[in-house]
Image 1 (tube, one colour):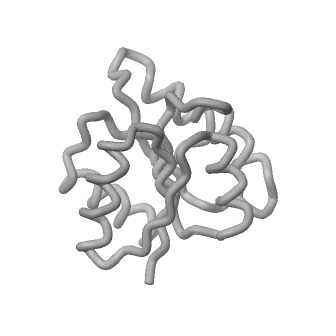
Image 2 (tube, one colour):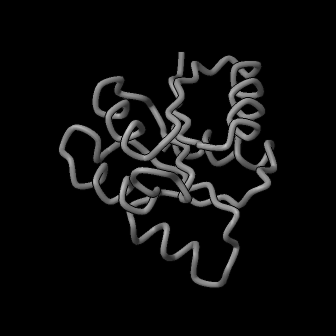
Length: 121
């Protein structure tokens, strides 16, 4: 079963995404801040990470940079999730180490396509 690490501090977003992903037969593990996300990525070895960029403790930008610099986590695909849809945000997320980028509110079908594309590559 594909294991997704969902790093999201907003309880409503976390609940909605985790329930919908589980319905699609993904195993979902959850972190509520950037530091916990980094720790869980290193200990639980997920297949892919959905990373909110506006997080407490360590933001998603820092977490992505850290994970891509670590030998044990550098190959785990990261999809940056953000409500910031400003010009240049996609590029900023990719520069920080994200493999793809999606805006909130999440369009679930589009996100599933991105997850599938990264897992199949």
